[in-house]
Image (cartoon, rainbow, N blue to C red; front, top):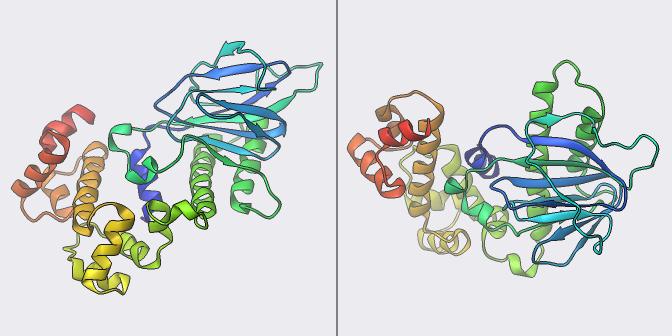
Length: 307
């Protein structure tokens, strides 16, 4: 997998949740802090996103708001509207909206949802994200994201059709990836993006090395070999990688190997020795020692507690 796909698949747990929601002014619904990463997409009308510790954000048709850290926030017709209720956690995917008014035009129709994340194994790329990502709708910008929004809106406005159980989770996964891709693309030209994961993903040399690591974490990589992938000398590559990623190349490789091993222990029944070899450890003892150092427990016990 590429880096971004790996990051999402490692952090995600369970299936995403979503619902089509319509509101008539005045309204102000509060969303408590959560382990899930929440999102709101305005399909029709306007509303305001009210972060807990930031200025209100106006949302219009086609705008996407993503809260990667599950921060507490509100949705309202106006910043001055008092909170009227709190939102219950979403479960599953809901078609239509039982609150859709029959005799009044809604102030806003939104697609609201959440992705369940395990914060204990979050990739540092996700830690670089802000509390709120706001992607305004602009003509000609982010066409893939707009297409995913349109497909999701169309699917949820109708009663469930054949294949809905497969279509909707896939579209929601696409939405998440397109949101992240769009945001990283927009941040590329910002002055404060010269270090960190935004810079790493767009730096040709570091990105090439990251792709190599994620494509084959079990390979016996050396700094020299990764430098060749990056088309840099050993010293120049190590310096640049550490500057942008925040860890030396082999330190990141070890961390990613063990993160991959933890995912395999949770999701498959392969023997520990097989997983050790798959992520680059020729000795089960060395793998167990490294795994215990990162996770505080041996692989077998980890599987028993998380499987």
